[in-house]
Length: 633
Image (cartoon, rainbow, N blue to C red):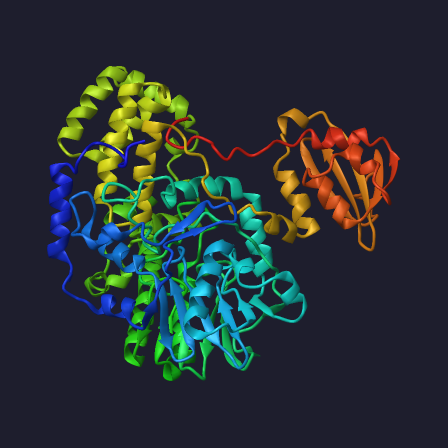
């Protein structure tokens, strides 16, 4: 594979548009640069972080090219943001609070206590978290980890926990704090639809793109995601209410719960002895996602804005700085209030204006094209759409309230993409004619239209080499011009896969620790999602599990639906096979670690009935596809 995503330079129109960005925004404002480098103490000597097998999971120097002037193949605003995010090392936020930044997509915050340190959000993987903790200890001494805190339920804020603390240390009393509902949301998101999310995340973060001026330059919220070992140690202490106070190793904390904002379970933290406020991921130096492009449940901008107002009311009078689990801090009480207030206005404006326009009859795509942000907000760098965008966020608000259907009956029962594409191409005079016209549109600089129309040729004939080449070239130009890091990555990943084939899923959060953290109820639900419905329409199989020191659970596959019932009520049908076993053995067979035949032979397992019925039931489960096509059918 070449060192770039393609051979084409920026088209003249893209180059002109990128140059115009320099005139539009205050690039001479160095406040963010000063803040991002304030308190720098040093960085790791070895620039490459490796796993136990020697495989590189993070390269600290991969983005050194960002020190150059921005080329025509990148939006100068995104280039500026990526340069700020690429600064890596240990930073002193204030006395007793330190951050490791640039070692993963997120930040790891370390707060010094009486005996050791509290680690907040230990990155995505164990290797980068361990390297970050080692960097801290190299500057501040070999202090033990005396507490861990997860601010919210996204993997880049808990996945590296095993790099900073062990199960034995937690069992011996090291507390792990998290907002109420953390575990349920952390494991369900990454298991129920984890395969699809991780495949799309490969596009969102551009994991397979070469890093460089024509490739991956960042993701806006951070540079990209590390590719090491993702783990999870369940919380030992839940934060259940706003105003709750906890002291860990002498560190006093006051919590604000913010469920339904950037994550279903999230919290902010006030440190009264430091006059500092941790905003988790609720206020960062960009417009965040209301619906992340990797896929998730739509977030609520109305409640997000209200919680930001509440944070100002609760803590602003006693805060001299605010920091988050991404980007760099804001210092000064007045600046903190302004920052949080502008972030609040950002989400409130998107919410209110989208609802105003949808009540005038406009659809999501129409609103996305018409909405204009207030000039005062647009002038603030931290409101720019480097990660979320005004365009896809307004569509998310529309989806949250009205769903996928825009009310036009012409859109109620459309053909699926491949069938529609075949008909469109036929109507337009065939593939050759479509491509002839699309090449003229490319020459005219109308890359959005090229991508939209050539998509039909590709879905009608995915092996059409000319269509693949033209689509890749057009996607590349859209990437070059994008201010949004995740949009750039999506466009360039699409070009890369059209040219070189699928890269699959380079990193996955469906890790053993997350599977182990599923409750039995969640595990049974996860299996039901995998049932091949049509293939199991005629099956009727009932299995009863008698779990030692636990519940009696009855599973039934009938009508293509796998249900489970706890207890002995009328919904629990008579079983074809009944199995008494430990919870560990139950998990092993349901996760495919142990076969039904081997399970029956295990000591302590009692089977009544035909164990082959269990084998038959499990045979109706399908495996998810981590390599499914995205830019082709």
